[in-house]
Amino acid sequence: MQRAKAVGVDAFALNIGTDSFTDTQLDYAYTSAQNNGMKVFLSFDFNWWGIGSATAVGRKIAQYANHPAQLKVDNKVFVSTFVGDGVNVDTLRSEAGQPIYLAPNFRPSFGTSLANVESAFNWMGWPHNGNNRAPDSNTVSVAQGDQQYISALNGKDYMAPVSPWFFTHFGREVSYAKNWLFPGDLLWFDRWQQLLTLQPRFVEIVSWNDYGESHYVGPLSSSHSDDGASKWVNDMPHDGWLDMARPYIAAYKAGATSVANYITQDQLFYWYRPQPMTANCDSTDTCWQGPEGGDYYIGRPNGYQTVTDSVFVVALLRSAGTVQVTSGNNVRSFSASPGATSFTVPMGVGQQKFSLTQGGTTVLSGTSLKDIIDGCARFWPIYARLTSNDLLSKAISGYQYPRGIHIKHNTNYHNHNHDNHQCLYYHKSCYYKHNHHDYQDFVRINFNHFHHFAIKWYKHNNYDR
Image (cartoon, rainbow, N blue to C red; front, side):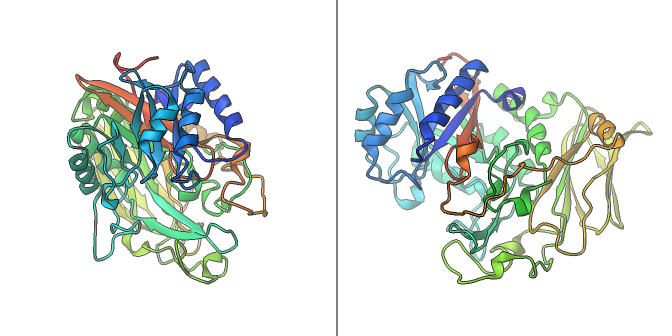
């Protein structure tokens, strides 16, 4: 929580299922939030809560509603969900026993009415085909999803998503086999720019530590058993994405439409896959085992053709400079203006080098610790790191990648939840903004399987600390 708070996060959403350990973990989370000056709220994952469980959901809300760390918006207990279309909202409210501010992930595309909620959360933070897969002959942009929700909400508050990536590659060795991706590329940069223009009341970052879907922005430090994601997660830190969000969060809270005035130091951020999209991983890839069906596709992940073999670079600068990127034998130089600028370089096999020159002096330079190889490196992970003087000093002194999620290997894949009893799962990050430039920030913690994590921000007095 301290790490999230340092970049502007004010609260955590607790994404929960129906596991026996849920209350124990919730108690820990509420206590931690109280001790760290943050807020939390419940988010019910309806992959586990049934549509007919409105009574149980309402009673769970009541159980924690009066805790000092409980988030309240407009003097109401804030509650969210992952899906849940069709749950009886009237029963849920009645069992909660006090006013609630309901911001569920109900989906207008399913025909679900949003008449009986205060807000709604859109989980689809990536371009897709309208059916939870990568774009094909049909493409639905994230911005189009925004407009669908805004229209359905008809003036009510909207909770918008922002996510850097999505890749999952679980084979038939586990019961929850799933194998697809959504295109990311420069999505993290482009989406933050959109949100500064859109200025919704809430924004959720998807996610803090959803390792299984590869969109984690938190540190690789959770100790838990291996759900199979270690194949593409270990030694793949995404911390750079979190650091890159800091000035955007500050700009969003201030109601600014540009991040330029909120950049406090010159920084370069970069990310890339460590192998081409056509890499042959057949000999070690469990996703070549059948049968195909549902979320599972044999071979390379569904949608792999929608990504590009590129290195992605973002410069956040206080003054102009020249950015040079070397990807294998590909060398490119770019003029970068003050503010935020993005660049794309064709992926080249070999070392990845980055530098920033200002006034004829090289002020930042470094070589990534992760080469791109012409072969199967780690399926489809993404690597994000920022180049700064601090990181350069670590690299010079022999700094190594974190091991990853410090996995305790467990081959007993008896269900989708087996690894969560050992740790708190953080998922989507969500930001809250009220009228008159009031902003809020939540972080969603997932206690069951991987879905989302929200961070929201508060900056005014329309919520109860």
